[in-house]
Image 1 (cartoon, rainbow, N blue to C red):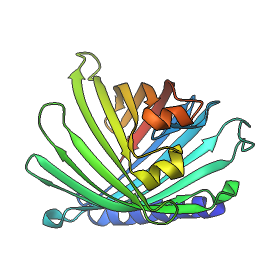
Image 2 (cartoon, rainbow, N blue to C red):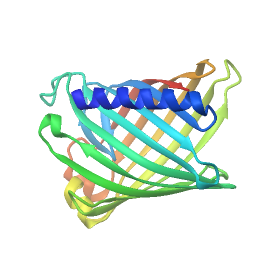
Image 3 (cartoon, one colour):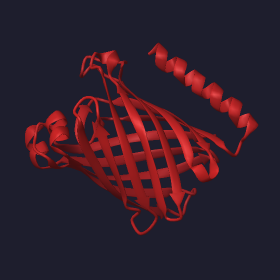
Length: 246
């Protein structure tokens, strides 16, 4: 916990310092959300309420793309897993992104830290591509090179609708995941194949120029062998998130 707080202060100080020197190149965003469950790739890790927050700092290097760092955490709000008021997970991500007309590419590395609840850690690298066309299709492939030595691919689509009041928008999304044999054995205790899908809807309410409130709902479900191997295989997730950008 102390390491997390210290890192957040360092990131905030760094971003503030450099933002004063070059307002256009540096940017930062903070988010805080409360959800009734924690779901990751169709798997339920907590069903009694969580707080999730993140800090992202980005530097726009022009033709070289944008370089970013992100810290994300999950805080259990109950004692379902014996971790009430504890950080069950903290993720550290370093990544690069760049747009080429309608095509956007990104890639990075993620460090998953579960040490505060005694579950160690793991690491993944990923690459992602999205295309600015109808339904905004996106494909992201992850490779866990420490714990399970396996691949996971996520394909998603989405659409944004202007609601016509308070500058609000409705974001609709759907995604489906595929796990190879090693990833399936490590997390779903099944065979390779399509492992999960989700349908989501969120409404963005701009409160200020740089502050947005977003209530959301998501329906998730496991598929195939992943469904057969897990008791909690489908449900809804409700939440609300507050995002501030600088």
